Image (cartoon, rainbow, N blue to C red; front, top):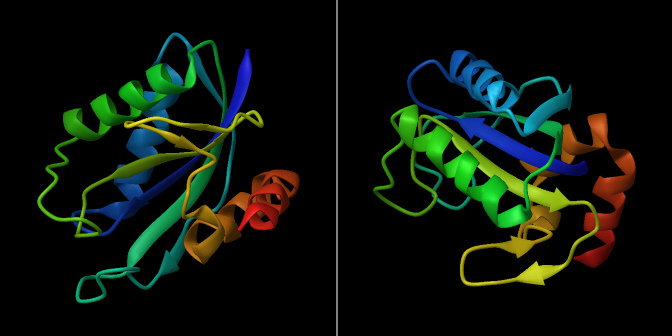
Length: 143
């Protein structure tokens, strides 16, 4: 099993409930086990700032899935929960990003690991430091 770290966020609907549902859906997948999750933090919107504040958290998972397959599961969960992608960095019911997968470094048209902007985003790093300070330090050192 590989270990991966995810960042989850939401800012419309009931963000705390949506984060909990996303964690539950991830953990219910036969090839994913959620092994740690951070507290939920509230942050101002990043990138596109004229929208409600976000609820953000991090989760560590163990998975039998390869990185791209884990991405597809995350995207399926987002879609099944009602996420519609209208605009970059816009409001969302749920967002699930893969921040790191083991110490894999890769760049494809669909997925870049570690996440290319994670080192710039406190809403990713603060929750990640809570559950995986070594991974957060590795990501910050790459910035």
